[in-house]
Image 1 (spheres, rainbow, N blue to C red):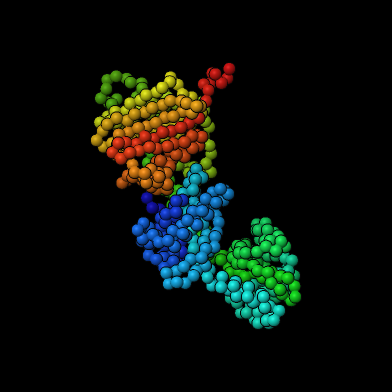
Image 2: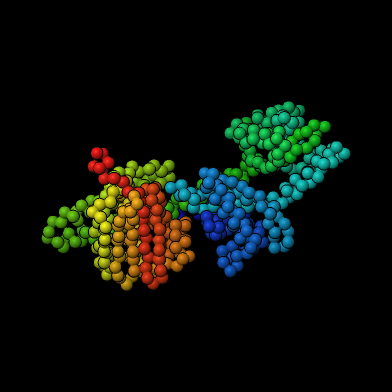
Length: 487
């Protein structure tokens, strides 16, 4: 299934100079690249095998999960944290960890794409600058010599106006001389898209708060747009309170990050598309089965034709979903509907497959109708998925029981099998990206089911016991019957 884009992503991921990892929302390391292993001093097995998982790696994982949860609560997709890490050699490293959320088509987080950069040398430089700042009035000449010799770009500003730029800084912004930038406002240099960030940092300075690190897009004097990363400190320069910023050009690194992010999105979208396309086989199987029955039957069974027409419409619906997979998702219009006839139709549809596996589907509805607001095709897909999973859990045959009742303005529909059951760990892992208990599964079926129920304002829960069976219970809000609601 791997496309050319995914191949390019895998190559770039493994060949990248900075450490990278794909981390699940529960903190499990799904994949690490060689650069990260070298940076942290461990082999790939130390990240993935439970008996080799080390406290230092566990601590990193916990911090990344906390950051991911914060991103979700703030409805943001990217954040960065600074973390200290002790290398097995005993060296204390300062890590810059950038975390990006990869979301599915429903906007749910699936993977934390995490990048680790060793900023130890830069932090050491920052420490030295702190020390130098306290003695600047005695050693200003030496300090300026140090700045002139730095390979990183240095700018000193006072009230947002440039007072000094070292040779590396002049080269970065394509300035011919220091005189060309003296007095220039940072509003001119920093791209307008980042002026809000710039204003916030100025406010921190005026309020005597730490300014810290930042990423900017800057407009060079030749009009070129560049990406820079650095940090700022308060200093005394020429007997004035100023701010010194030390930056490095990360434009090439940013291009690589964007390319990797896009490749990861394409990879995730491709796997999701494969999972949804897999669902097309369900109605096709039913249609072929009914065609065989019609060929051997002399009766004209309208029920078969109605179900076949319904399944063809469901295939059309799934194909349309695939065509717009990469576009912003729009909500399907919910309509008042009685859930019980839909369940009867699903049971009729699946009875043929169940009989071939020596399985009987038994339904028990506690009332004549249960009205909800929903989208029939999506809910039909939910219960087909649940019945299909139940049948696959019962290779020796048995009974699947479907119960439906309403209580406290909620509808409860349960699908109970007599299969092999699941462990507590397997139940907890349900719904996580790409987790599956099947040899050939994609792990996306339950994710799709959960998202559909969530979008209908409902919930899905599971109870299971090994060698006894599993029960999935779908809860949906109940509405009044249309006639009663309009009267």
